[in-house]
Image (cartoon, rainbow, N blue to C red; front, top):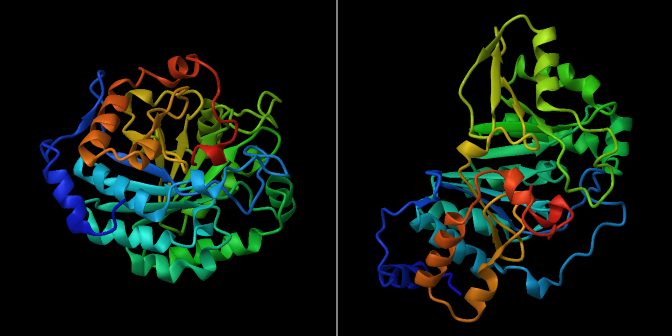
Length: 347
């Protein structure tokens, strides 16, 4: 395990792998974006993620430690990763998260550092996150209604989340996004309310399709609201939606005339976006997923703990991504479901 940068550099130099290497698959996709789940625990119990009592969390010894996470981040940086997103669970529950952000900012070539959070703990952490070097925050917020928030999350924390959003907007952080999981007859009547947040705020409001990682709670209960339906809702309410550029997952992204922010729709279940995928996922227990819907994993944790050098880890990563299938539909059909909740995968 490494914390000292010089130790890492020595091993990378000895790996014999060129520094300008990029991670590619057989379909010509290049992977430069790492989504790293730093824990499984969460302080909410959203109905599309896990049940009230939670899911069986793994023992701490099976999860990656700080030095292991830093080692993986450095290896990924040397393989051409330019963007990282820390996810969970709820990543702000991890006490050394600021150390991980600082390490990434100070010791790697990763130029874009982001965080996905439910926002509950943002009010007491926002200043430290800015100082640590964070570039962007995605806040998961599925309703602006207090009673519906309690129904969706099984907690009464809406005021803290809204406070966190306000503080993020005034923090100077470059990128602020609000993620809404759209659900039929649940929050689909709030789509326009969320879009109106973009009128006076430089944010991206993003509607995300419901995905089948909810520990068998509400998937296939009629709550699925397709991306095309969301786009139709937008077009029926706003006369002019100007297409603009967004991230690779923001398959539909628009700007409304005279509005400051942007609105996006992410077809995460319809999977229109697979051809532009640029993501690598690492779970909190150190497994690499080359697709959100992958039914196979590559165990980086055990490779490190049994003494594999960085050169070997690099080859594991490259090999796993070369095996990535053409799209998520094919990936989902290969084998059995390995994880039943998004908190076990990383948001």
